[in-house]
Image (cartoon, rainbow, N blue to C red; front, top):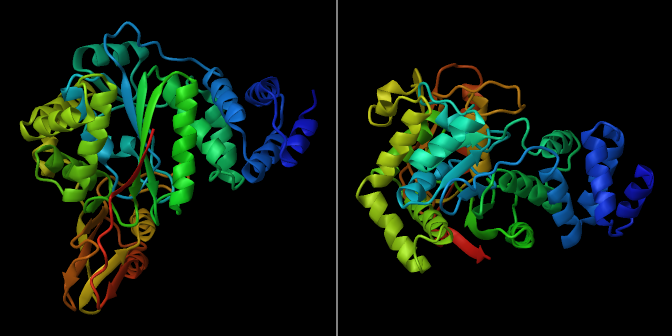
Length: 434
């Protein structure tokens, strides 16, 4: 078969056979198909989409392009959680120990910050000494002993996805539902899980801006999971304003620590408990979801989830004392207040703008090779729906350099919309799929 013929057929909206999908993935991974042809194929998929059969085969081929993790020697159901990316979304740091403290085995494979969205690995690595580059033996040992481990995607896990993602990033084909779905699911299945809980974000701070697109993405991933004999549930959640109050790596670790001590923001606590409950239920630790919710809340209130988080941090070389003594975490040297230009109600806070502004002062990456300043970020003082006075503090920008600070402050100020009327309250959890 010829690559150009497959590109043409996909461009014209035809369905490719499983063998043809395999030919493309294997050929590109081995370097036999050049970037320019695979770029054309990705753009054809972007415009023409893929059938359920094509997406599943694409996922399987990416999964089989490298090593897979075998966790069958560890007793229990292995459950992970994945978020499609948001601003201030530190739920993994809370949800994973909540589920693990209830007895679920949680191999938490996470990513790094890219664009305006934060990365779990970067947040964890702001804890002094914490590292995620574990060997396979260390990963298995920690899961067996603690039931919780945080790792990144290894070079050997789904290498086809790594190569395809890098190409998508520079060819404007990132926001394709079949390509997003196969990318996420190939990595997750490769890590040896039995079940997965998805947090599909929608809104200004998410990749999916419309709920109909978020629903299609959730349905596609749940469908892939079902066809690959994995139990998958997805929540579609609001990302029109940052989750919680903290945006920035060490700042988000502080807020996650407070939340695990049952003194975190209401929205962050609510979403974390619901995600954890679904992990506990899929992990077969309770007969019903309502019972799983009670178990999750109990482990938050009694401190056992916080203890589990500290255990995992210590096991991975981190200084667990820093979770209580925040002065041991990286701290910014400067602070700039952003004030409300007028009185009224906060009608909305553009999450993407807050994420972009935090990147401008060093909290995130525009390119994969960019370095991150773990100390910097933004703390909101108000959320949508709250009343503010003229001159009151909307948020505080924590910085270590003056570069781009004024520009970032302007972006932040523009992110807050003040109106004379109190806005309708938004639902945080919009839909459940699966």
